[in-house]
Amino acid sequence: MAVTIKDVAARAGVSPSTVSRVCNNNPSISRETRERVQKAIEELGYELPAPQEQAVGCPVRHIAIVLPPSVREAYENTFYLKALRGISQVCNDRQVALSVVTGKDYEEVLQSVQTLHRSGQVDGFVLLYSRRSDIVVDYLCEQGLLYVIVGRANELANQTISVDNDNLLAGKEATDYLYDLGHRRIGFIGSKTGFMYAEERRSGYQLSHLLHNLPVRADYCIEMESLTPASAEAVHRLLQCEDRPTAFVVSDDMLALALERTCSKMNLSIPEDVSIIAFNNSLYAQLASPQITTVDINCILLGQEAARQIIAHAANPNLSTTKIVVPHTIVERDSCAKR
Image 1: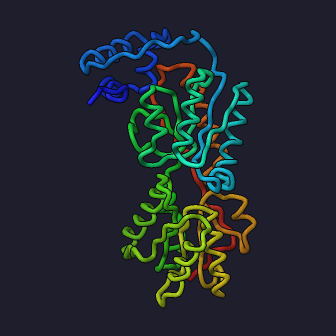
Image 2 (image 1 turned 60 degrees about the vertical axis):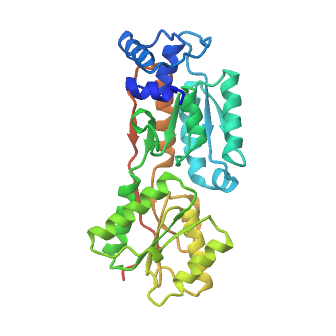
Image 3 (image 1 turned 90 degrees about the vertical axis):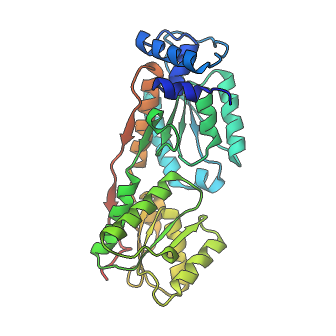
């Protein structure tokens, strides 16, 4: 199997983008780092790509924002709108141009990223999602391109610049909140799109159960695709059970709306019959009836920090890989009650 730029980066203990800069004789790389990368190249027998022309000392001019390829996720979920707002605030202040990339599937997203890369006009990419087996991340790593992930990196975690919440802790605290209200039968509803945040929030939900000596029941956990009829039917069946959950942790405010709608159709009152705590503190949570108690993950701050990190690393490739953790808070509203 051919040696890749990721193999060299792992051997040298640097990011793929640093290896790419060494290969292109970028003068901003320190002698120590350059020697370490060159040694790794020699040891692994990596074949150097043709050098790319690069303007020395050129300021950051253009950043591409990569959204997931779902129309609903990319254009209806207010998380992305708020994160984009945060990125825009920082980039406007620094006079950095922005492009937004999405598509009908990940192959189409990848094609758009490749087109922007080949144009030579983009200094880095911000991915507003993190998922397993991502062909977009694979391409960015293989090409040694600078990128920041909003979320937890699935691969090359120690070499990936990331901005995230502690979603495991947030999931645990959301479940603890319901436990402290007296709930002992607590369900979980999360996305089944493979996003890392949903997996971590579910892990936090499970951790809370273990620490409180509650059984983790698989039949209390539902993965659903937003507001589809099939998803609503799965929730309906669970709520028909004699020992149904009295409360739910929901990984996203939009999914919480689906739960509220199903409860209403079944004449179940919120919060008297079913309590709900969700995530994102979106407009949906505020407009719901009753308003939804939610975990505010500071979406705007996530975007601001992502923009600051990519601008800083583009200007100074010798910076150590950074992992920023943005705090979260529980916003109490009307969808939870004591049991």
